[in-house]
Amino acid sequence: MSLILGMETSCDETAAAIVADGRRIVANVVASQVELHRQYGGVFPEMASRQHVLDIVPVIRETMARANAEWSDLDAIAVTNGPGLVGSLLVGVNAAKAIAWAKGLPLMGINHMEAHVYANWLLPLARVGKEAEARWSDPQFPLVCLIVSGGHTDLVWMTDHGEYRILGRTIDDAAGEAFDKVARLLGLGYPGGPAIQAKAEGGDPEAFGLPRAWLDGSYDFSFSGLKTAVLRVVQEYEGKGKRPLRARARQLSSDTVPKVPLADLAASFQAAVADVLVEKTRRAAEEFHAKEVLLAGGVASNTLLRQRMREEVMVPVRHLPPALCTDNAAMVAAVGHFKYQAGERSGWELDVYPRLGLD
Ligand code: KG4
Ligand code: ZN
Image (cartoon, rainbow, N blue to C red; front, side, top):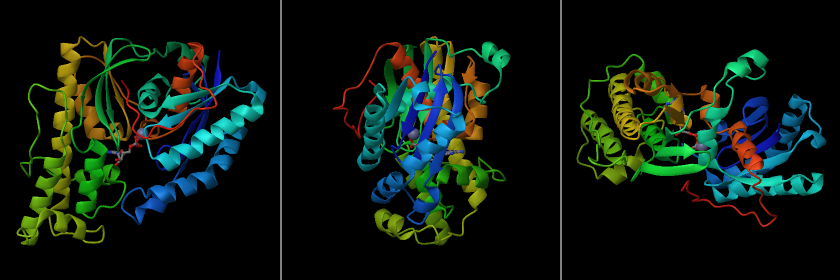
């Protein structure tokens, strides 16, 4: 039995959660900064860290209150220490250190990407009861996990707890970044993923023949060519195709709505992203004889992606409710449980690593 307080401030969500045994969410609180960053069309790092400073203590207090927990009930504190924005990470890590020191609790630094993977160990509903809990099976190794977030697109081979091999990753934009940039280009606002998904609903995914970067013979991904192709379509519709791409990209703001068939273009873009993500994951699961496939990260909440994965991948595909795909601290506490059981502890010198990798 373990009761872990998880903390997450790597980007634009201030989050804390208490998780029992790495699977049962006792309390899960997320203070989103989406409204704050919307006016900039993306995360403004300095604003993000300042907002974390304001939110971190209320979020932790709220988490403790919802869990009806005393500090003495907890076994340890797990906090994201990379990858992410340096100023944001520092707020969470310093708060975690202060609490761990003051309350005499062990401290564990957690890799944010590993946390996204371990969200798949969480029971999807809080307090679902002992029976449902007993029926819930943990992910089975070996497995393939596709991590698709705003900052990362990694296809990971996992043979045991903490054992990762990166099969492929993006060589340019992350999948979520492509959603965000294209949404901005189409005047759909921030964050782009949910906006494109909504706009694509009435659209024809075959209306535009957008490119798929297959990068044959590798499990790597590339999305920047696709983004440029969308930009060219927009330019053609506006009859201004001769402007330099960079200047044009900068000039388009979220209030400039180009006269393009938005639903068709959004649907075509979404289908192009899904095609490549699904096909590479399908191939990896087959080649490595995976027992199951896990989806993780914000883009894993995409309905089309989930549906196509379920239809096309031969082994069971596990995906989470959207609130556990996007950044949260329950996933941090879930990793914390396995590290705590393995006896891993961080010292007071625990630092932040903005570019921390999985392998
Ligand atoms: O995992 P996450 O919350 O934060 C990072 O660690 O980056 O992922 C955020 C990303 C954003 O780029 C957002 O546009 C994307 O996830 N996203 C989606 C959807 N919901 C969020 N992308 C596609 N479809 C969605 N429904
Ligand atoms: Zn994330």
